Image (tube, rainbow, N blue to C red; front, side, top):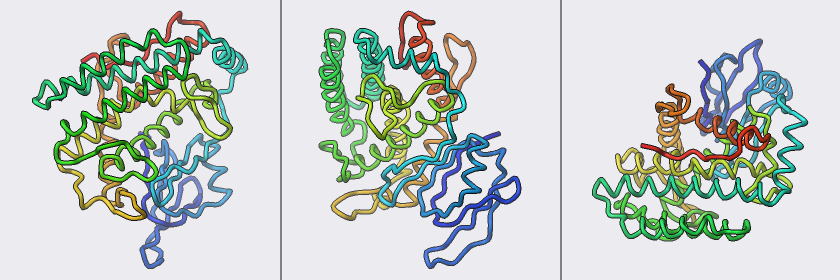
Length: 335
């Protein structure tokens, strides 16, 4: 069974016959015994340490359609190695571009993305409100904002609603996680523990979504809510909006409320707050457990993992773009 590998140590990775050989280095630069990873077991690799690689390794990963995502010392996502697109389809490329250009189709997708994202935020707040965490005032505020989504006539207005909704939503975190204070959302750098976790989790969610898009015919550079840029996969930003409350925020609530991550798992430097290595490992362990959880899918009538839900979302969007479906319906928590 394939799995995701997370490399936190510095080291060197190379191809060894039909396996990968990883030689880690300790903090003094001494090489540790080699570890071998069978290629058949690898789904994706996340690299948080300094890793030496060569062309032979990248060629091999490309042949096996394995992605490798890189993060710098301060947890910033820096880029990905991804094999050349193997599911490219001219028809999809044309229809996706037309869906972006045609205002009513772009607005339909962008509106649905905001609808799904804010709905899932609302479900999170109601879940905790029912368990004694008073978020009732924030729930009313978010419901009011959600009522204005359908009246939006352009993308900037939608982005404004999304920003205000997220501000209201984040202000409820102090009721859900009373041991930590968040205040305002800060990113560059995050200034406290919750902001550090949100930034880290959002980056991981973005790369997960990018991976799922890669295994479909969608072009990750043509987006609908976020403006397509020159050097970013903005469709991953679009789709991940729907899943951040379900995957990222629920994982944050778990690791903090269960004290799996505590203040000792953060480093404060350069006027910022960042997860240390132990904190990252703990978060990623909880993240993997979250992704592997399964739910009974209502329309498919079978159990699917949270990770697979992201790929299903890509398929749904592709069907709308190809006009196989008259409407794009974002994933919404139904339980």
